[in-house]
Image (tube, rainbow, N blue to C red):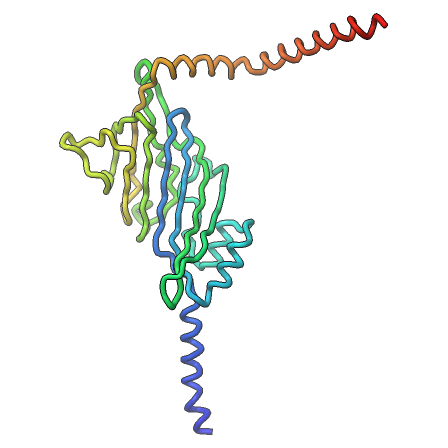
Length: 259
């Protein structure tokens, strides 16, 4: 009997130790917002770095094979609220959502690393105004952020990074807070930069960002006629249908009705 009582703590410790190695650990979040040069939409790509213990490998691979799982499902699987859309449209909507969990790359005897990669499109991520002939100013909509909420507002959580990718040919007008990367030039501006990044615990409650794009004359002409086409598209379709109807009626009268 004494031997049994002596073995119980050992068995309990062994069981606890086995369960302790069955876990997931989110190690990093990378959110990249790719701004558009022709409209106010933005493409968002998010990557969550995840440590998977050996005891969780089977569950992870089974979940990875179920391609219909949502981000809410992954929150329940890895016991973390981090898998979510951190950039949302003004009405909380996203489109073109895609989710791709990577395979686990074993790094040590205790487990390995995997990535939850998901992408989506956000409508009305920016507001745009024409400030001069062929010159447009885009202002980031600060209501699109969906990061960690604190008493003073939103901030980037620990182990995270926010990236904004600028369209080709754009010029940064203003930005606050200043990005952690890259450093400004000698004039204090970010000319010729295509990527700006902010690191963990950066406050976002007063975030502001704007840039300008100057259209070429060719782009202006194409945009003008594209706008005309969009305005008269229903009429164009009606004219095409009428022309087809006239051709069909002509063929019928010419070759069928005379027989």
